[in-house]
Image (cartoon, rainbow over all chains, first blue to last red; front, side, top):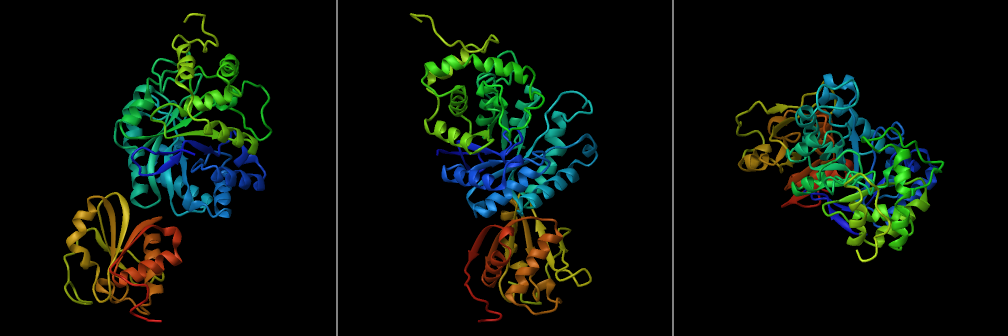
Length: 340
Length: 145
């Protein structure tokens, strides 16, 4: 497994990351023995980055990941990232709320400190509307101060933010010098974080990955498989969670599912097993990406992802075919006309 | 170098008793705090105090949040009761971090401070991010065994 620099943190992370979120669901709803087997298999395959958050299964993901890594005596071999999400009521005391959330995460993980703590809220312009969005000024001010305080106190080694929300504000945050990593929404249905303008009709992240990587940030790709929509099958695994509300505009799950089906012919033409292989290797091929998170419902899905990752980045021709159709809001065209 | 109860250094706002090692009512361990960044604990050797590190504090504080205690029985913590075993001195550091609301830190131990640092890493492995052992040894000069 390829190990990549996580920006300038000094940490190395595997190209394929282990997502312990609610959507895949194994680390939230799975059987504990299978959870441990999956983490063991991930370690064996060379996966070194593990992603969790307090919100995944109301703390269960952190508890289960912490337990599995402890049982496998693997904590000293991995990089673990968790997150903090502020509720509107927390905004009165952001630093205190961030610290409390971090201490609770550490208790669930069973650790004295975490490698990476990422701010989880979306960044929105204007006055917060009572939702979970926070303003850019807040992200770069009180939130960044609160996170840096935890670094100073040895509770978190590195801090990052989540690249969802207003693209201009996200670019500003990436260049601010206050954060060391960013989670970027990037997939074969909307790769605009890596190919400005290629948003498939959704939100245009305007090359956030390039801007962040250029500024020395570690880039963690999220939703590489569009919450499973890129499986292009309506049936979901029993451990899988609800894909939830769209993380970005124009990414409704039903619509993503439909557009993912249009990738199947291209995947076949490129000799790939499935649109999922296409999507994963597409994400892995983007320069500047440190790790691509995939969430798992069971061990078999992990085996698939490891196998596909082992085949390397998608060839450039495949990447271009995926991207070319998305600039005008169309799904990728499966075939080129003769003589093209 | 200061002696065990020798030279009285100037005390800044950042230099405060921050104990309490061993319980709420007992007197506090004295520690200096400087700088911003990832935390680094500096542990001095036998018969000196945290003043040992005075010449390098500014340089290190440019990149680290420094915590520089006077170990129990030394310097401004000289009044704290014994035993000054390496185990006690190491546990004092864990209590110091607890009191400061801190998680883990890089720990540098010089001379006898290195023995304390090693014991700290043994007894509290979750609190040590990186261990730096300088001019030290793997036994306890205070209570040899």
